Length: 108
Image 1 (tube, helix red, strand yellow):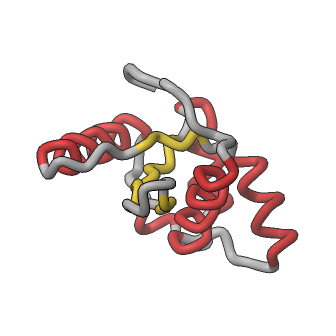
Image 2 (cartoon, rainbow, N blue to C red):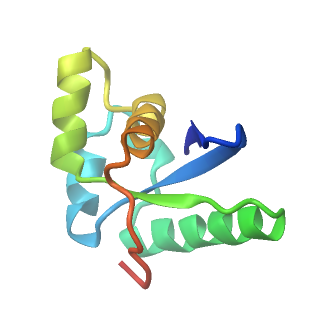
C-alpha cells in the first residue's frame, strides 16, 4: 500500500490495484511470489477486505491502477527487485503523481 499526503496534510493510503489479465504475469515477475495470493480472485477478496477495513476506520483509500509491465520497467530503471516494497513504492509514486488512480470498481 502506498501513501500520499493531501494538501490538508493528512495521509491518503493508496492501494495497488492489479488487473485480472496481468495477475499471472505479476506472479511470474515478482521476486517474492510467495507473498502474493495464488489467484487473482483470492487477491481481490483480500484487497476488498482491506478497503472495507480502512473505510470502517474512517480512512478513504484510493485505488491505484497498476500496469504490471510499467511496474517492471520502473523497477528496472530504479534497480529494484520487483518485490512487496517496490510494489508499494510504485503505487505511492503513481498516487503522488496523480497517475494510475481511477474509479476502477467491481470485480476486476
